[in-house]
Image 1 (tube, rainbow, N blue to C red):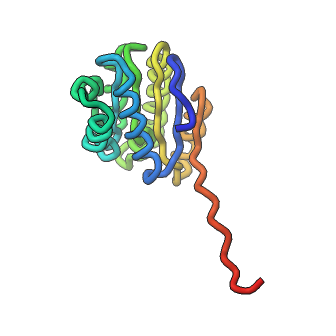
Image 2: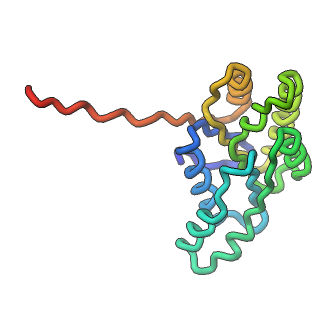
Length: 179
């Protein structure tokens, strides 16, 4: 991870699933090792990015007394944008670090109208700003494909204190048979 999470800041990591999911799980394991009890919340938007088994193995590999570290991580799962808003609204401001997996995925719901998505998104942004008052908030988003999600992604990036965008490595030069 290219940055450390400072209290009171809103971070965004933009990366494809193959990169973002393992990176965020590794960061969550690292935070669980370093965070005081009960001060970490992982929100799994969509229910498929958070990998508790991998995190448990990583923590157990690094510490013999791994159970207290595992107890530090509380998990909330949201399957709609309204559930995500509800989870974040129930969270006490500045009480603990918040890590949200695949943040924009739930705003790409065909059952929710685009004006309603924008309203929920605005509500989520206001709540995220309140939550990062005293504790860091990290959002992982995949690079947007659809135009309406692109607009939300740009608006989100403008609100974040720091945005980390994954750039794929340069491919190696082609080997030449003849000079």
